[in-house]
Length: 232
Image (cartoon, rainbow, N blue to C red; front, side, top):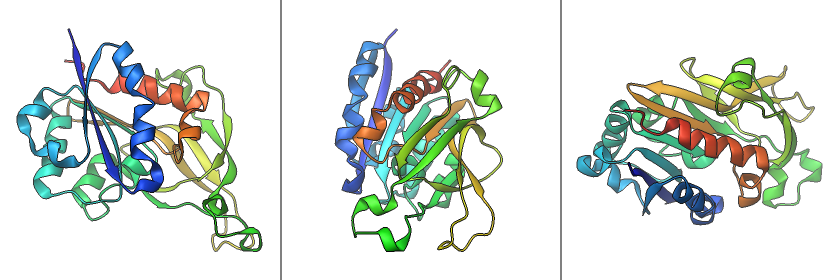
């Protein structure tokens, strides 16, 4: 039976929503998905289209969503449609929608930067070497099993979240002389969320195409797409 994947992309161009989502189109096709691509969340309000969708892959940073659109996405997930995304394309989407935040379970707050004395006014000012550490749950989960802790040098997301997420990997923000916090802060880096009959997967790495091409990051997302896909 053919499975139906919907890629929804757009929002802030700095996260390259077209180039990053195109990375995964061949994988989805190879796995037998029929892929539909939309350039805005308007499709979420189409109940018949969403009912036929087994997996949503979203990459829409910031931007806006209407009440009927977020309701359509929520209802589809509750009915079994999977939802997967990375970085700002899912964890920093639709900032004005509390209903969307409730669905996802975690929200980007900031990405701490380098020592101010070392900043040069480029995006790299926010690129920090940091570890992504697989949790005990993650070591046995189909998405992350067999993946070892790894290091990235890119944006390190600080995430505000609730406790209904199942955290597969974390990253720790250390204390620094130029930062105001007083002890290390652990943020979820990869999590899943069960919502009705649906499954949600969020990975915070993914600021650039190059990050998504990292073997561990890409493997987690590809496995996440398969795991999140409608099961019944």
